[in-house]
Length: 139
Image 1 (cartoon, helix red, strand yellow):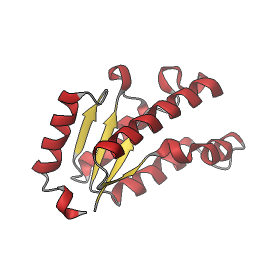
Image 2: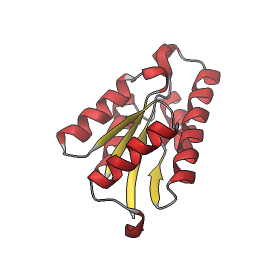
Image 3: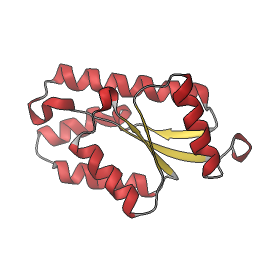
């Protein structure tokens, strides 16, 4: 099975000033994108950080983890994946997403960028999967 990591903004354009509501909305958008990808490509195993953010956000708030710790953990997960999908709503790449992309690039892990999952994006994603030799038969 092909395992992909969905890189996405958590705090968004407001960065450390983001409210819990903004973070929740960003995470919900990422979870919905992950669900759409899974619906179109059920044979792809997808890791979506937003699905695990509640505990991590709490640990960050009580200062048990730093942003660097969180990104190091994310990069460790990326290292165990075959590729990265960089989900950039409104063509926005956060600083954390940049760290994840640069890590993937430095380690030869393919990255696919998308803003939404319309039919054109879906076709480009299918092409990306085929380019790297990943297909439903691998599931």
